[in-house]
Length: 168
Image (cartoon, rainbow, N blue to C red; front, side):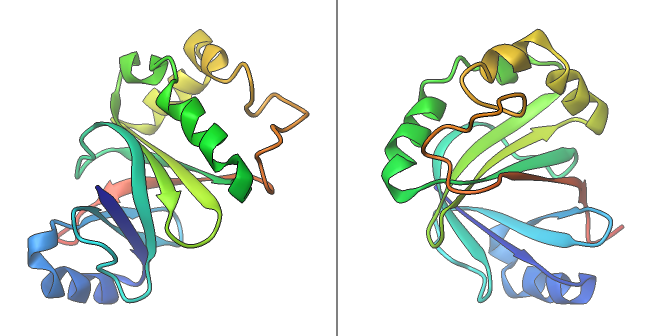
C-alpha cells in the first residue's frame, strides 16, 4: 500500500479532489495547514506531494477523527532496525479506547518516517499518552529518553490534525 500527502489551500485541495475523484482523498487540518491524504495502490498521485510506502498498518483511516503524526528522521543504515521495532511492537495502542488506525510510513524520498495514529478525538490521544501502555511501548526510546537510539538522524517532531470535509 502507498500513501501520499500534500498541503494546500481549500481551493487547491478541492481541485485535487475533483481531479482524482477515484482516490477517495481524506483531508485534515491544524491551525494553519490543510493536508490531503491518499492511501491505496497508486504511487505519487500528487505533483508536489510526500510519498510513502506502508511498513505496517492496523485499522482504517476514517474521514472523522484526530490524527497525530510523529515525524522521525532515520539514518539509512538504521532503517531495518527502526522498521523491525515497529513490526514487532506489542500492539498496545490498538487496544486503547478511541484508537482508529496506525500507519508506519517509510519515505520514498528523504529520511523522515511518519508514525501516524488516528483517534476518535484529541482526548483519546492524551489518554493514550498518559497511560501505562504508552510508557511500556516507549521503554527503549521515546519522549522521556535523553539518549536517542543510534538510528535516529535528527530531531523528531509531532504534528496534530483534525479530520475535515471539503463540504463543511
